[in-house]
Image 1 (tube, rainbow, N blue to C red):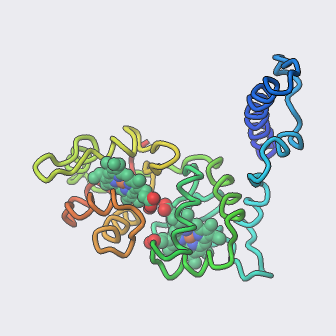
Image 2: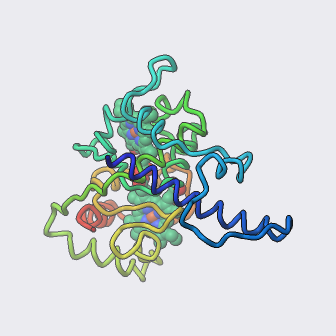
Length: 241
Ligand code: HEC
Ligand code: HEC
């Protein structure tokens, strides 16, 4: 089962961290460090190794994403963002395979109002930070949803902005932060490839107009882009993979 293998992947990752912290501790306690990684530390011990740091629960994230929580008035995210975060219409952004830290930051920013969107502000109102981390971890594990560029006449302009920026206006290459294939760079720089062009163009406009105030880097960049440049680069990014 896919979900089980994801969880075990996560568990072995954690166990890796636990092994490192056991190694660090063994120096203090004088215990001999067993270098054999085969019998990985069970999850319970891993939890104890990092007190105060809440455990991310991918299964709880999936449940909340897919079913919502009527008792708290949380609408199922799936209703708009689609199964596995692979939204089928440009009205709603694709969320699959996005870096978890980025997604969590967005959910917090909808809640604190630095990213103003009436629909999403309502959606996150009763989510806890733990919920946000759970959902984000679940989404990060879902397959990338690919897209296609639609507008042949602006592909060249879009590509040149994405790869090289616009030197005359001091616009940096988008690829520098969002990666040559649009995969982003964990954990700060979001994945861009395959995202709906209409959504990304709307975000660039929101940065420029100050509706989305959660990234001074992106506000500075968007302020220098014309509507046509925003559309061209967004359409190009939709086809990136
Ligand atoms: C009624 C439709 C709807 C529902 C239900 C919904 N969303 Fe959204 N979501 C949107 C819209 C519209 C946007 C774009 C907001 C904007 O333009 O800033 C969005 C944006 C987002 C983003 C930002 C994506 C990015 O690339 O920055 C995240 C993350 C997100 N939603 C997560 C969720 C989660 C988690 C839930 C469930 C708790 C949820 N959404 C439920 C409509 C919805
Ligand atoms: C210096 C690094 C950097 C460069 C260069 C950069 N970006 Fe970004 N971009 C970011 C960061 C950081 C975010 C996430 C902001 C946040 O936390 O909300 C972002 C977010 C975005 C988003 C919103 C994505 C979403 O899912 O909502 C779009 C669209 C975007 N960038 C487009 C571009 C384009 C187009 C270019 C090139 C003209 C570009 N970026 C260049 C750092 C950069």
